[in-house]
Amino acid sequence: MYKYIVLSLLYVIFPSTVFSQSIEDVLKDYDRGRIERVREMLPLLEARYYDQPEFLFLKAVFEEDGETAFAIYSEINENFPDDPIFERVLWRMCQYNYAKGLYVTCSEMVDRFLERFPDSDYTRNAMELRQNITDYLGEKEPQIEQEPVPDQPVFTIQVGAFASRTNARRQLSYYRRLGIYNSEIREQTVGERTLFKIWVGEFNSKDEAREAGEELKRRYRIPAVTIVQKNQ
Image (cartoon, rainbow, N blue to C red):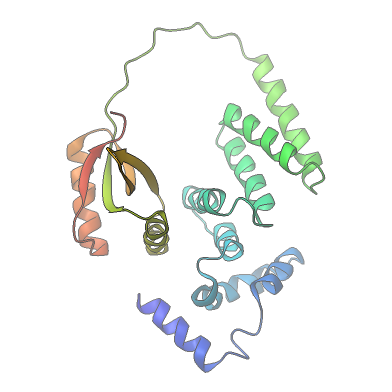
């Protein structure tokens, strides 16, 4: 929290110097290969653009942990599918799934990309990526079908429940700014009432989820958490 207060004060005190560039200008610098300049600008831009998709994209680009970066891309995918930056985000998600060896998921995402952005600068790369996946999957021997394994219980940590989707999204954005990227909103209807619940993580046992929930409470001062089973 103190970081955002300090950055906000910088914006008030030095609006014409520290924040002379718009987020669009910074994106242009990134496209021109001014990588270090953009890296230096990001902390200063965060106070002003922390919840904007363009800033989130750049933040993910410079994130060293791939899982965290993908979580940020997923947040943009969920909340800003119509923003111009979404083209870059979707392509990055295609590349991530390919690098992780998730070829079926990647193939589906590439098809979505080509359908949505047929004239993209990444179109040729996307088509090559799809062909690579097709060649790879075609070389694999057919797998013998096995009996389905019954679903194991999957638990999650509920850190909030709201009657308004807007309020739930606002709280979710706050948690992600804290660094809790493995969070999501789940809509549940009970009777005539609809609630928008914020869930964090997936765990194989209730004890594991409970231990992680206590850590969330200590680290982020969340007043209360509830352990729920996701796949009931």
